[in-house]
Length: 172
Image 1 (spheres, one colour):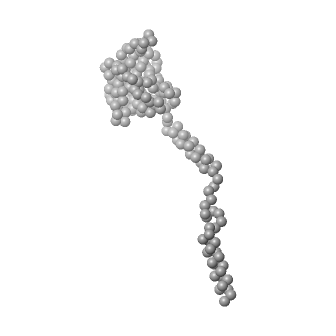
Image 2 (cartoon, one colour; image 1 turned 90 degrees about the vertical axis):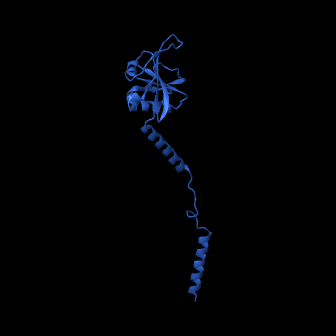
Image 3 (cartoon, helix red, strand yellow; image 1 turned 120 degrees about the horizontal axis):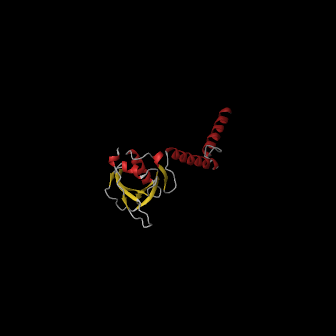
C-alpha cells in the first residue's frame, strides 16, 4: 500500500467526528503525503487547519480528519461513535500500511486514554483469564462420581453372587 491510497479532499469536509488520537506529526508531515488543509474558525477565536480524507479500512471506505493547531502534534478525527477505538486502531494500522505514519513513534495517545492493544497485552489478558478460571476450579469441592465412592448396588450384587457360588462349590 502507498500514500496514494489515501484520497485527500481538496477542501476539508465537515465531519461529525470525535477526536480519537494525538499524533506526533505536524502539518508539514501530513502535507508531504498529500494532505490539503483548510483553515476553519473553531468558534473559540482560533483557526486550526483541517484536512479530510478517505481510505479503505478492511475493504470499507472510512473518512477521517486531521486537525492542526500549528503545533508539533496533530489530532486524528474519526467519524461516529468509537468508544473502544477499534475503528481508530484499524485506521492507524491502515495509515501505517500506506506509509503515512509509524504507530510506534507517531501515536502519542488515544482519546480514551488507553494505549493501543498489542498482541502481548491480549496474551497477558488471556493468561489472567485462564489463571482466574483455574483458581475457581481449584476452589470448588471435588465432585463425587459413582466410581470414586463406595461401589454401587450392582457391584455389591456381583460380590454377593461370587461369595455364594464359591461357598456352594466348596461344600460339594
